[in-house]
Amino acid sequence: MGDEKKESLGTSGCVLVQDMGERGKNKLPNFLLSVRLKYVKLGYHYLISHGMYLLLVPLLGVAAAHLSTLTIKDFLQLWNHLKFNLVTVILCSALMVFLATLYFMSRPRKVYLVDFACYKPEKARMCTREIFMERSVLTGTFSEENLAFQKKILERSGLGQNTYLPEAVLRVPPNPCMAEARKEAELVMFGAIDQLLAKTGVKAKDIGILVVNCSLFNPTPSSLP
Image (cartoon, rainbow, N blue to C red; front, side, top):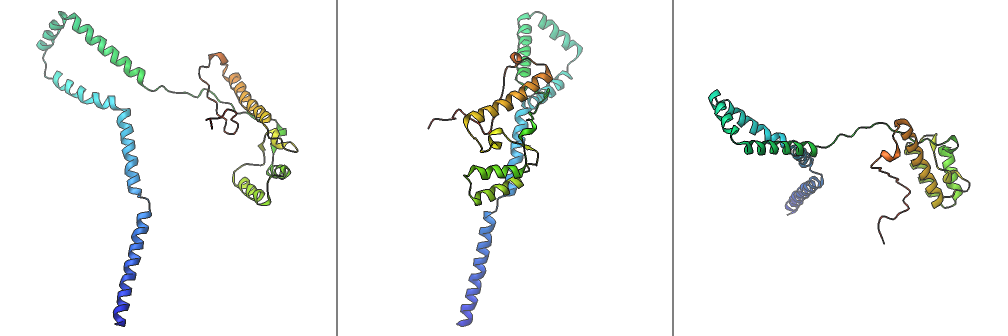
């Protein structure tokens, strides 16, 4: 009996380990499925992007095969037939021009980078990591744990010792308010735009679309509560 129980426990233990292994395998992501889905998306994108070419190539092949069987007599007969059907010729020509125009207008236009400009503040705005931590301590709103975490993030963020910070942060004591945030946003955006217009010689009235993105300062709420 003792041997039978031991054998039974051993068998159940093996089954349990095997079952846990299968569960562990099921928890792993199916990389093969993700790779297949990736290629399906790429194939669908290629099909949509080159659908016109994929449709025209078989038609051109059929037309070329049919034209290769025609003789000079057939071409003369076709010319005589079209010569007396002016309406058909005009309609076919108009249809071809319309399709060609529609195709070229629907193609995505190329976007060219003419020039770029980056705003560089004055040297008085330069701040080291040590100065930033001193300003954080002076705010009086962070605990020792918060400051330690902030220092760890600052060291791993990739910010060097010549990083520029706004005046509101460098001021003693710091003055984070709406007026300072608006002043900083205007200084950065207008400074970069003025440099860019001076480089390219483009007039502001000639610009049709202007895309502005400010990650921190957003005075207009995106949605109502």
